[in-house]
Image 1 (tube, helix red, strand yellow):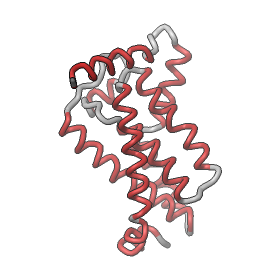
Image 2: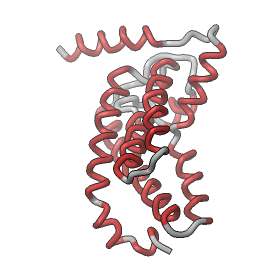
Image 3: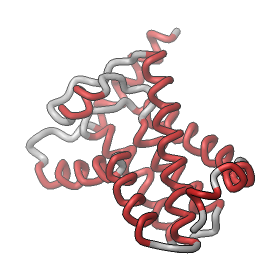
Image 4: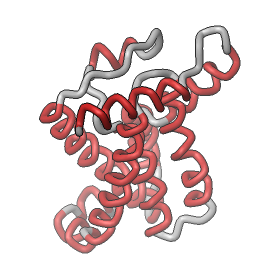
Length: 182
């Protein structure tokens, strides 16, 4: 049964693939795919955390902490499952640094960030991230670095992670005041 599901997943994923001839759409997809990179988010959040005070400082630390925990959890799952990425001509950096595709860390991260923005009442950021998050996942599929199931499961994990992380906020505030508050 798993083999049949895997075959259907691969077949569906190929339907979303953008061939190299579609240069403009691939450029847009590449931008969206990279916009979910953890290093990009962590670098930006570190700069915000370093040079701000008050609520923005706290939010940068909370989001960065969520990304670090999320990335660690996803890597554990990926190395336990060890599903190879689809064949594609794009994404060498991802293939070299992380050859496993299930689940999509980018999909988890994007939906988690949107969920955190909603849970923390960060309008209009919550709306922007809600629009952006599915585009990141679709870009990853269309460029051939993930299968549809990698992204769909990533979205589900991202929602769960956001809910759990938001529930843990009182503990985080108590344990890490030196990082969260200035």
